[in-house]
Image (cartoon, rainbow over all chains, first blue to last red; front, side, top):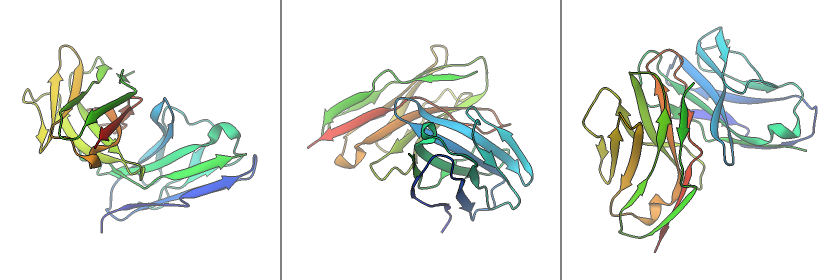
Amino acid sequence: EAQVTQNPRYLITVTGKKLTVTCSQNMNHEYMSWYRQDPGLGLRQIYYSMNVEVTDKGDVPEGYKVSRKEKRNFPLILESPSPNQTSLYFCASSPQGTVYEQYFGPGTRLTVT
Amino acid sequence: AQTVTQSQPEMSVQEAETVTLSCTYDTSENNYYLFWYKQPPSRQMILVIRQEAYKQQNATENRFSVNFQKAAKSFSLKISDSQLGDTAMYFCAFMKDFGNEKLTFGTGTRLTIIP
């Protein structure tokens, strides 16, 4: 089954404790992206990747890091989480260079206390 | 930069009725793509319908159709014969033509179908 998976689905952590949210897709997509969803703001792009070893900032990259060492994986790293990073996070992927549907993961609910 | 505006935070409609969700956007691009995504309580993002700006014909998908007015930069979603399963948050989204396939989202409209 073609899908984007994220882990964990739910996470409660404390300020300053490094964490990683994993994202993996099995569709051989070049393009992958991370969004965060906040009430009243919709979804906003954090980082994106056009292909392996190619990443760039989206609209709200502060406090986040990403890496793309393999085509299928695109982890989101919070080196020192803060309460303002409490949010719902989505990973998405699509083929590069065409406007196909972006496939979204199931979301990760992160709470930073 | 592109912006997407959804001016209706919440709507409700009786089951089997028709409802229209509004979306306006601002861009200087000539070629672009517009989307409506549905987010049910499961939080999954589901593509409802897509419209290419270069196409004059409005997109339709079963009970879902759009009214695309390029000059007015308007992209409304019409849901006909609404069903209880249509209860969800609906997001309008914009994508430039290729390059970074970033979706710029509106703030969403929470739609409730009343039995």
